[in-house]
Image (cartoon, rainbow, N blue to C red; front, top):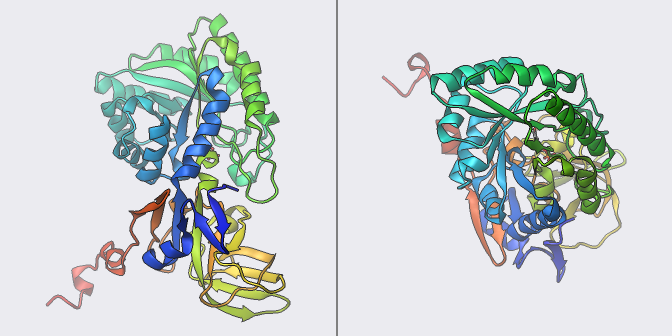
Length: 423
Ligand SMILES: *Cc1c(COP(=O)(O)O)cnc(C)c1O
C-alpha cells in the first residue's frame, strides 16, 4: 500500500491532510488521489530503468483525469492512449503530441485523422485492416504515420481472464509470426512508416516470467525482421506491471529491469513501456459513508453510499480492495459484506470480509482505487458521477466536481410529443 495514506492520531491521512476533513468539504462518496504517491511510483520506475534509457508512457486509461496525466507528465511521462477522447485529455494535460502513443484494437477514421493532424509520436496498429485505413487517411492528408506493430506473442500472463491480452485467442495484436508480412505490406504504403513493434500481454502481472517470454519473442522477431531487410528501431514493451491490493508480491523493479536488459537492451532500439495501474492504482482511494448496517444470516451488511457504478472492479474482476475505516473503532472483527444501494447482487465492495464492525455515518476508505476506478464509473441507477480530488501535500483541488442532478438530467432530451412542459 502506498505510504501516502497513513493513520495518524487514529485518523487516516493523505499526505498532510485528514481524509475526513476533505470528506466534510466535498461530501461522499468521492475519489481521492495523492500527488506524492503518483510521483514516487513514477520515480521508482524511472530510477529502476534509468540505465536502460526506457521511456515511460503512462497508460491513460487507468485514470484519465487530466490532472493525473499532468502530474505524471511533469515527472517526464508521455501518454499511451486508446481513444480520441483520451487523446484530447492528454493534450489538455499538456503532454506534447510527440510523446503520445495511440494504442487500441480499432480506431475510427476520425480518431486517426485527429491524431495525425496533431502529429502524435506513434500509432500502434493491431491489424492489416487498420494498417490499410491508417494509410488511406494519412495519404489523403499527405502525412506519413509513424507506426508500430502490436504483436501477440502468445504468452499467458497468468492473470485474470478479463485482463489477459497476450494469448492467441485474445483479440489483441497480430500473431507475431505474421510480423514480416505486416512490415512488407507497410513498406509498400506511402502513408506509413513502420519501424516499431509493441507487446502488451495483460494487466496486474506480478510474476515477471511472462514478460521475459514475451520480450524474448520480440527479440527473436526483431532479429529476424532485420535479416529480412526491415528496420526496427523502437520496441514498446507494454504495460501490465501489477500492484499490491491484498497479499500479492509486488513485482521487483530491479528484476524487471534485469529482464529488459537480458532480452532487448542490446538491440540498439529505443525502448518504452506503458504502465497504467502501477502508477496510479495505489495512489488513490474511494471514500464512502456507511448509510446503514443490516444484520443478515451469519454476516452483517454494511451498506454504503458508494456503489458498483462508482467502482466496478470487485464485481467485474472479482477484485480485492482493502477497506479501512477513516477513524479507528473498537470491537471484535466479524464477517461483513460491504455493499452499495444498487439493485444488483453484484453491487459490492467486499464479501465475507473479516473486519471491524461499522456504524451508520462511519467513513470507509476503499483502498487501491486509483486505477480503473473513476474511469469505469457510470450513472447506473441514475446516480450522478462522484467527484475526484487531488491532494498535493497540504492542499487539495477538486479535479472533477460532483455531477449535479441538473447536469445528469440535462444529458437527456424529451421529444416534443412527450414534453408536457411545452404547449
Ligand atoms: C491497458 C493497457 C496498458 C496499461 O495496462 P496496466 O495494466 O494498467 O499497466 C498498456 N498498454 C496497452 C496497450 C493497454 O491496453
